[in-house]
Amino acid sequence: MEHIQSSIEKILNRPDVAASVRAIHERVLSHPGVIMFLRTHPEIDQRTIERGMLKLNEYAEQMHGNQIIEKKAVIEGYQPVLHLEKGQIMVAYEKTQALRDLENERALEKKFKSLFLPDEVRDANFSDFDLTTTDRKLALRAASQFLNATRSKQQTKGLYLHGSFGVGKTYLLAAIGNALKKERVATILVHAPGFVSEAKRRIRTDSFDSFLESFQTVPVLLIDDIGAESISPWVRDELFGIILQYRMMHRLPTLFSSNLSYDELELHFGITNDQGDKLKAMRLMERIRTTTNPIEFLGENRRRY
Ligand code: ADP
Ligand code: MG
Image 1 (cartoon, rainbow, N blue to C red):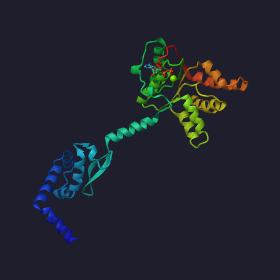
Image 2 (image 1 turned 90 degrees about the horizontal axis):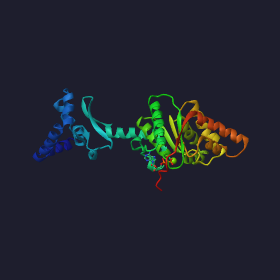
Image 3 (image 1 turned 30 degrees about the vertical axis):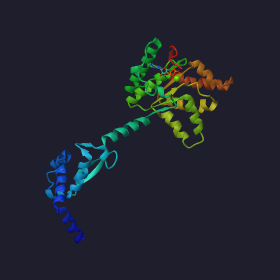
């Protein structure tokens, strides 16, 4: 050991090596972050600095000012922080602001789910909102009343946007969803036909209960194209029925879009002409009617294909 130690010292004392070590020390000690650290710790003496040189260098190599140099980062997404531990200079690693922002963004994405919807409405927003027809203005006013109420945490009814194909119902639902996302309100925007087939696929799996629960409890639920799904007594009573019953009881708003009016949707839920079915359809429709304000879209078909 003694022998190795002395041969290392011999190398370090060679003029060329000594000069480059000195250059490194100078570079490290003139790094603004290092200067700042030493200034905030006047108790650090020369000997501690020399002992901590490797740590100071580890820090200085990765940092430009107080910014991490991405390609020099030892641990991706983390930046070195100097501190004193039992009188010795040490480096700890903390998440960078960029990583924290990314994680917040991901947490938000989780709160805002959009399922089975076309890409074209993913960025739907109110600033591009076309207002050429009166009914669209009315729809926009209803949407903004809904958003204001949600923003001020008032209880409010949901909306029932109905009208023919291509008038912009899905676009408006998605714009509302995106506005809620900005407000940090958790929402699920789901296309009814996709939702129903996914529910059927999960029915015999362990994930069904949590799947159902997420639709029951999400603060705002947006169901696009209700009435376009293939209906069955199970879908009506055990899926929509259970979800909407829970949401009504807990006063959680649900917004719908549909090609069908309330009355037409009731016929769709009736399935057969059987008296029992009719009654169940009426009961489900009652929940939808009492918890939403209807908005009719009359505009022309905007689809270009
Ligand atoms: P619907 O759901 O009523 O069938 P969509 O919402 O899918 O209709 O709208 C049809 C097309 O028009 C889509 O391409 C959509 O992006 C566009 N669109 C709808 N409403 C608006 C709007 N207010 N401003 C701009 N583009 C719109
Ligand atoms: Mg649509």
